[in-house]
Image (cartoon, rainbow over all chains, first blue to last red; front, side):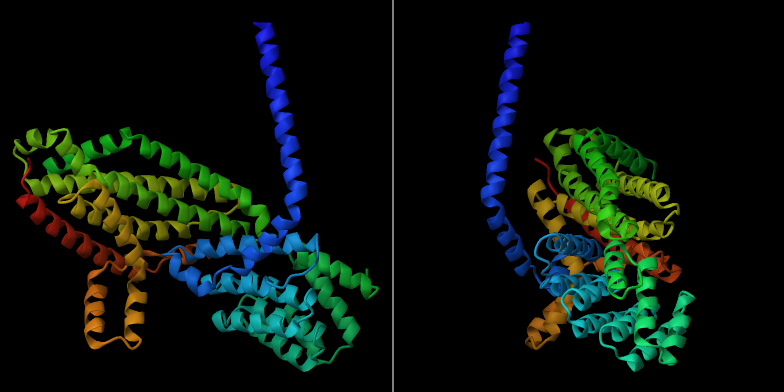
Length: 220
Length: 255
């Protein structure tokens, strides 16, 4: 009985070791190809309109799946090549499926402005969000942020911050930024304040970027 | 009415005995709990993701249960020849059909409400606030389930289980397409096609009326007017389908 058990254990362990060795070999050989496939997979990511038609009443859940995929895409590239070319497309899919989902506008705009250095595209995405959610102060505030920090357009930023401060439910700090921007506060001082705000209220990834920027500006 | 209730009670009992209910119930439970695991990946939107997936998953499972249990509902009675002994009793075929409909609806609606309850508990424990708004959305979904169940009962009254399941699923898909169908037809289609589409549009169940899951996720309650409209529309549609199903079933010959 014991001998049979030992033999079973031996074969079981051998088989497990063989499987592990095989899996790691496949991982080593196939990784570059898998990465390419993953990239291609996103290239074929259907448009939000197509997914909306196929979702038959489950658009909101489909938007969540696309959102999780978008974050995964960002995370994968953040630890590898730092290329985020398709983030705009993914966020476009998410927001077409669920136009009232605010976070993808903010996150997508932030990545496009900070990582891709395309703040205009980021502001475009935020403007789309504002058209769908005209009373959302966060979208106006983020638009003001990008105008100020990335485009150095103080007048544009002041206009957005002021509008954000007039929207219902805004946080108290919004009025402070509206006042600063309207007084044409110094670029660096205001930028530091804005980044500190992101550090205090943004999500994990936004906080990372805020820390980096604050270090660059010598404020951390 | 007592006869109808007796049939519906038996239908619930029969459905609960089916392994499918248990499997789907467990799957739904796992889905609601499992969606909690996705929460950290959602970048601060965990609560939304959990509620979205929980509501969508529960409704999808309840719809599938309704279609697959319902498709063999009447066929099984015929196959086991129990239909002869039932109809030999003082019960009309329409009453038998109504009882079957009520029993199946009650089973699937209970599963849906149960899963919504689990979802609400999970969200309350994980995020510290109870998402009361989901119950309005679930109320609308229960009416939607009633329509799906009535469609399934209608088809099971005269066709095979496979075809009933096919038509049931088609009704769900097309029911969500009603608006799009009309929109596409309005874009330059010939007059005949437009008239036909219009007729189909008014005949199809408008299931989007019952979809308030997007509102529930944002904590917005379903307005009483919308609920009343959905209730009236659902009652009329279900009533119409059951009258039609009863007429067909009355004329059916059993061999």
